[in-house]
Image 1: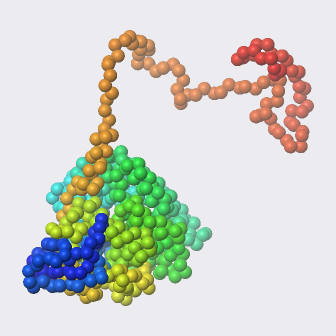
Image 2 (image 1 turned 90 degrees about the horizontal axis):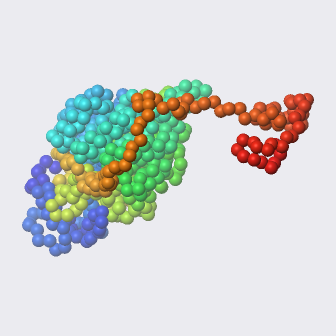
Image 3 (image 1 turned 30 degrees about the vertical axis):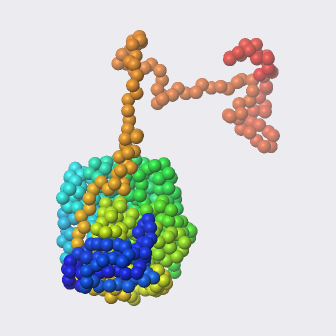
Length: 568
């Protein structure tokens, strides 16, 4: 649709408006790309396009917080560019994506950002923003982070504790990066895995591959056990707490890491957690499939977990607010690209498709599965992301004055997911054959109908870059209050006015033995009895010192330590 959103008037009539905190029967009137009125019996001007939503739900458009488009990664370029990727998002009910910029080591963050914008601006079909990866650390990175925040509309940075020698920051560097994020009011996203041990396990498996025969996709699960994620998650939260910085943990994939997040929240830490559609639905048995192509198609990091109960637990954590956001982490590769690692699992590009199916799958597994209600569904797919990334209530809520990003949702409608009818790139769909109840009928982006009953009506390049503001209240209000309440203060007391013992041997080391020079323990052997520690005891009854004459017992009147009436 080439017409400007200012020329379009839309009335959505007869539906139930669902926000993250309430559901109400109301009509929605849209004009100039903005929601103008929400209520019953609205007075509207003529000429509006009327959409009958009787028996349907009217939801805020989805916000996908982790999407990789036209990205070069592990010697492969993703199978979606900014046009096909955002088109697939709109077809699935997502009206905004936040994409990644991942600079190479020592590459300028600003240059990487500008290169990404030059690719995205002419192609996107919906609003988009950008995360920038902090893949190395130094004064230049610090300065460019501040420039991106103040001048370029970026408010989030992603740090990696994994990908050793590629993206990984050391703990001291992560601490400094988190401190800087706090100072400039940015959201600190952290991928938490123990990169050192992952590298060790991967190298060990490669050495043992000939003996054990482990070179296939199962190696990704073996080399990255969930305890390495849980340890790194705890370490990341600890470092962030010392840096006084809110932390946003991405790709939470295991029960162990979920427990760490839950514990931190109970302790009052400012922690947000994001899982992915795949981790909340699929399990790691996929890596042991007899078909190599099927197994390789599921390779991502952190890997899908072997315990079949993990997806059920993660979905429950989304339902009870331990985890706050579900993203697709859309990074599609073809089977031919995955085949670069046909003989070495460490060379299989990490990434899964899913931007188009995220909303329907979470409705099917979460709402119909009884893990969340319709309001919580809106929270984890849209509203929470809008709050965390500081665009709420312009996005993530249906109220007058908000951007007209709206989805008419049919909770009774259904579709069968298949690679044959998808808009997203790649030659495989992880949910092939899954029948989902709950589908988008009409998607409206910035007041324009862009997808209706499966028909796409939006021009390439009609989307806009959406600059994001820093210091989101959802994260920083609580952190500011915590800093005030936990500030270190001196104890007010009267100064000591008594005598002070003069320091002897000033400037010289104490004559007492140090911890490093512990004297050897003196021998405590007694001449009259067998030394049980030094003797050679035999179960046969014969002892090495049986032929040595025994000394007779003697009464000790004044032994060391005081008198005794016993016999030694």
